[in-house]
Every structure is written in C-alpha cells, then in structure tokens.
Image (tube, rainbow, N blue to C red; front, top):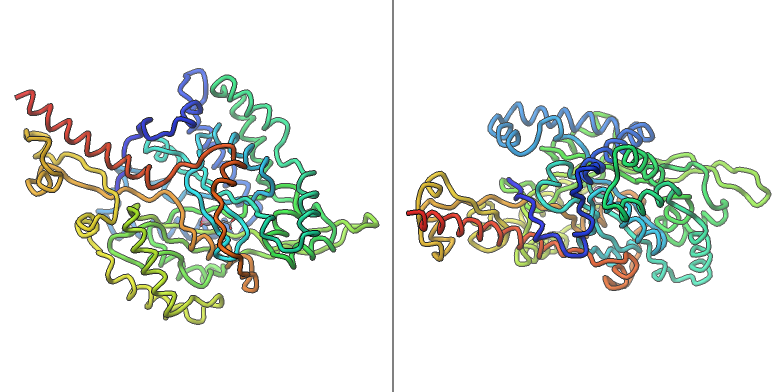
Length: 485
Ligand code: OOG
Ligand code: NI
C-alpha cells in the first residue's frame, strides 16, 4: 500500500494557517515526533504492561518480516523498518468544551488536525469524538501519531444534580500548564516555534497527559460518578486527561492477540473490525484489558483514603484500504449481519464462534484489489506503469481502458481514521463488562464543532480528493507525453 504525496489542496482552508513552513522554526512534524516519543517513554514507565506489549509487537513484526521478504521489501520503500513498531495513536477523554478547543490549538502546533466525527452514544458510551492527526502523505510518513479525543457528554447523564456537580468540579480544573498555553499562543502568533521553544513545548504539553494518583474528588463523589457511568468517573475525578492507551502498529494482529497470554497480559475477547483477509480493509484493533491502579481520594476531613481506578491499557492496530461510502455501507451491513448471529461475549467464551460468523458474513466483500476497485468499494491511488511512462495516450480515455492497456496501475490508499463500533468495543472492554448502558442515539456534530471551535475534516472527502488528484496527475502526464511527441 502506498500513501500519496502531501498536497496542500486537501488541507481545508481553516487549517492552512497552521502549516508551518518557515525555516527558522522546527517543523510541526518534528514537534509531533518528539512529542510521541516522549509520550511513549512516559507511558512505558507508568504502565509496565505496555512495555511488554511493545516488546511482543516488535517480535511479531520481526518474525512476520523474516517470513515474508517481499513484504519486507515493500515496507522498506514506504517506511523505515525501525519505525514500524512505533506508536500510531493514543487516546484521551476531555470534560469541558474549553478543554477541547484549547486541545485543538495545542495539537495544531504539532501538525495534528481534527478529522472525522464519531458519535459513541449509540454504543452506550456518553462521549463524542474526533481524531487529531497529521493530514497528507509527507506528514503521515514523517510521524503518523494521532490522538483519538473524546468529549464527555454530560447532557446524557440523567441525574441532574450530579450533572451540575460534575460540571462544577470540571470547571475548576486546569488541564494545561501556563507554559503550554503561552507557547501555543506564541506559535500561533509567529507561525511556529524555534528549537528551544519547541523542546519546552513538548515537555509542557506532556504534563496534560500524565497520570495523577491523587484524585480531584472525595471517595463519595467518586462512587456517585462511577455509579452513573465509569467513564464519567474517569473524566471528572482527575486533574487531567491522562493518556489512557497508546497503540503501536502490528504486521500480524492475529499473532499478537494469540500470544498475549504467554506474555502474561490479558487480551480483550476479540479483535475489533473486519475479519482476517488477503486484502485488508479499514482497521483491525485489539487491546489488553485496563489495569486496576491505586488511587487515593481526599475525604472531607482532609485525610487521604486508598482506593483504585481502572482506566489505562495498551492497544495494537493493523490498517487496510480506505473504503468509499458504498464500501463502508457494505462493511457496516456485513458487520451488523454477523452481530445478529452472534455478539462477542466480554469474557471471550464465544470468541471462536464470533470469528467464524464474522468471516462468513464477509464472504460477499470482494477480497482482491481489482474486485474492490471494480465495485467502487475502496479508494485507490493511480500512477503510470513503466510502460505508461514511455507511452503517449489520449488522456481523456477512461481510467479502466488505461489500466486495461497496462499504462496505469492502482494501489490501495491506507485508512488513517477510526471506526465507531470498534472504538465502542475498545471503550467497553476497558470500562468493565457491566458498563454497557443504553443511550438514545444523538449525534450532535454541530455542537461538537462549536465546542471544538472548528469544523472537522470529512474523511471521505479527504480520501476522494487524494484519489481524484492521482487521476488528474496521471492524465496530465499522459497528455504532456502526447504534446511532447
Ligand atoms: C478511546 C477508544 C477508541 C480506538 O482505537 O478506537 C480508540 C478511549 O477509550 O478513550 O482509541
Ligand atoms: Ni485506540
């Protein structure tokens, strides 16, 4: 799979001002790389089981490449091999609109912009979310780190008194250091940060994501929040939005899932997303279950009471082709069909049956790149073949006929976003099996964007734009070849 060259035409106008080009400044991509490395070190230190997962992933990736020299060669073209097992994403949960809008500005300094809107209320999780991520091939290649960012929806909490109290607690906390705010403002003013400022910015921004083992609330309030929903307790009870997981990329997710128990880490019951396939589509993910960690709560008499909280885990991901709305609708239908036959049980007792039902349900989804393309299910990047580079052709001809003549080739475009059903499965498995609650579906993208202070980029438009631009390039090259005749 390949990713297409960065083209500023795909970057929506509201983002353009943030793209740092001045040579005096450290590039946003370099700031993001430094930040994701610092985050990885901090998380491995705080959550040793995550370090174990990283070691397992590195081993499985090495085994996979050793067994498949062709894949090794392909990857060498697109990625440096040492970087394959590095983190691809992490996640945080925010409490208040102003936290979300400031987070957007902080991430923009690192070249990460909001893409996609995910409503998780349907899945029983009272949040809605976006992913802050690099946009465009060059930035993704430099460092693909993204952060799945959720905003708590207190409006979905039935208990009005509790809602008001939660709001009050949240409105008092300050999740960003003064230094983060000052340096973000400076970056916005100047259009970037120099080396010294960039280093300080990374250190300051990291503080927002740190774990706090002393809660912001007393034991009684913690329990009330927890009884309303474990996620509400996780957001409201702490001084900041601790990073709740990091996610490296694996080349063989089935192997990592199978080997986790040997490494004494407990995997969630099933892998989220599509089944194992020859031509991978969208995104497959799994995680180890969140750990119970000691936390103390300050009682009204001022004394600290020992307790615990479960929030942090580790995840892995494997990505495939980005699907068109038609392909995505087929994916959603097939996934729903399989879940009508069998729902994955949280304890893993029916995992094998679920995997089988899922594979069976996906039989109608073509499993060749040509088949996926012929049915308009996926996005592809087009380029000239060696023959096409030498040939001349009438560029107004159909893409199909240019392919049939061996002048043009196509490669799948990698899906860089998330899946709401999968995200809900990841949330649920880490909130505990009793956390599933029904909320009425209530997507509210407008409200989310108002709180964010910007629109999110529509991921389908984005992939379609990449595909269209590749076709335009191919046509242009073919016609200039003709003109040169
Ligand atoms: C985020 C869960 C979603 C993913 O990979 O789909 C997610 C969370 O638990 O806060 O990270
Ligand atoms: Ni995740």
